[in-house]
Each structure stands twice: as structure tokens, then as C-alpha cells.
Image (cartoon, rainbow, N blue to C red; front, side, top):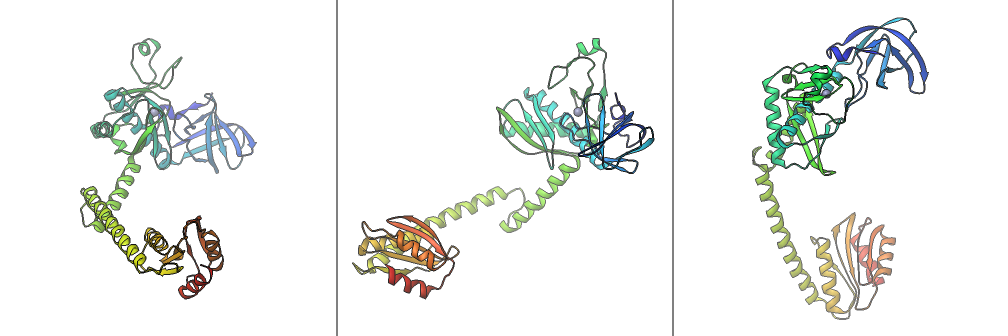
Length: 383
Ligand SMILES: [Zn+2]
């Protein structure tokens, strides 16, 4: 069994060990040492990377007893080797992991929520809860967890004897047998084999970045430590930029966007009314029995449709309404009663690099080759 140095001291970055075996594998070289500070992937925490002598450690895994390092070059069996962790990666993992303990413990204490899924991903930590929670409940738990961070109390990792364990309450994802390693952080006690910070204050900040309902509970994306700072700083920069566009300070963006949306809805209504009036005017001016093309600059797709259909209804003949739009020139083709404009639509698309189609009574699309005069001449020929 490999001696797991990280279980005794999560802050050990450098160590010496003896190479017990080194085997070529498709991924690199599988190296087993007598002892290691490299944490293997497990319990939602990613493996450490770093160096063993001149070799790069690409991955670390365990079968529970033996820890296997995957390196890029072979190591001499029997030799002593110096191991050195990529400390920024490990510290980040410990910030996320310890923060997760504090937040999970708070959710459990406040609402009885169990943590049923945990994964330190990039850029966020994923946490799944056993029960649904409201936005307010999550906000309250986040506030309480951050208070525990600011209290800066010691994080304790220990393996109690069986008698003590039997009378000790702790959270665990599964039933455990034999010795259990307990981790106490910010008022929570939980079984865990991972690496943790020494004090809650080192977590810095816990931020729930997003949440959604998932499998009867919630799926949270969470950032702790440096990641939380970055998420908040980037979010603030983005909010400030939006605020400048909206002439509103951060803190009143929602009200500003709501005003903008209601203004847009009013404009859409006015546009629809104007396009209806325009369609009626085109219809009134059209000559009965006469196929025609209408140039309706400024009309959108819906306006073109209304105009083409109003004119065709008035004349009893096909009508094509055109305006700049789409990939160049937007068109709407309305048929005479019982007519079929699909062949005309196909011919138009073919002649002017168009896209679009529809039903016999009505087709709509746009033309990349947007020469108005040639398109109108072509339509005069085919309608
Ligand atoms: Zn843990």
C-alpha cells in the first residue's frame, strides 16, 4: 500500500520517495512509489500534476491501496526520486473542496439537503442536492457559508477510533466500513478522503454561480477561492458595461432592461399597425386582375407577407412584395385564389441565389443576388 503523505499533510508540496515499479502503458509510464504527496483522482477532486525528478506527472489514480502515477518518461526502479506538486492546481482543488464541505454542510444543517453529487470541474464545481431548494434558500445558505469562511476556524481531519465513530454524527454519501476519515469544517462534519485547507478563511469566498432543478433536487455550479473572485470580478465588469449601455448603475439593471423590453413591445405593436395600414394601402391601389411586384422598403418579413397577401386578395392575381433584408433582398410571394406560387419561388431562388419556400398560397425567402431591377423584370416575366 502506498504511504499517502497528503492524508497527513495536505500542504506538502515536495517529497522524496523510492521507485517501486515502472511499466510502459499506452498513456505513458505507470510509476508506483513507496510514498507520495500526489493526490489521485477521487471523491470529486481531480488528481494532482507535477514532476517526479525530470518526469512530468500527467495523471494519478488509485485502486484504493496503490497509487499509480502516469509519467511521460520512465523512472529507474529502486532509485530515489524527488516529487514536486503543481501547487497552484492543488491549492485550487483544496479551495473548491473545502468550500464545498462548508456549503454542503450549511445546506444540510438549514434544509436537510444531502449532497448527492460533487465534481470539481472547470471553470466551476458541480454540486447536486437531494431536494429542491428555492433561490432564496440558496442565497441564505450562501450567506451563512460565507460567514463560516470569514470566521476563519480550523479545519480538522482525523480518523476516530471505532467506539468514538459509532457515537459521532457525520455526513457521508455511502455506508462506510472500517476506519473513517472525518473532516470538520465550518460547523460541518463529513467523511472524506480528499485534501483540505487548514482554515476556513483560506476558502476566501463561496459563490453559487447558477442553479437549476435536476433529478428531484438541484444542480449547483459553485466557485470558491480564486475562482469565486474571478467569477464575481468578471460578472461585475460585464454588469458595468451593460449599465453604461443602459445608462443605469449596477444594481438597477433589471429595472432598466424591463423598461427596454416594454418599450420594444410597444414598438413592435406600432410597427405591426403601420404595416397593416401599409398593406391595406397597397391593396387599395392595386389593379384587379393584374399580377404585380411591390417594392416596400422598410417592411420586415411580416410586413412583406401582409402586403403580398393584401394585394393578391384585392387583385385576385399573384403578388410579390420585395424589400432589402435576409441575405440581400427579402421577398414574399402570394398566390391568386387556388394558385400555386411554389414554381415561381423555385425559379426566383434559382435565378438569384435565393433561399426560401412555403405553401402553394404563399412563399417567403431571400435572395443573395439583390439587383432590384433585374429581380423585378424577372418577376414580370414569370408571374
Ligand atoms: Zn473533503
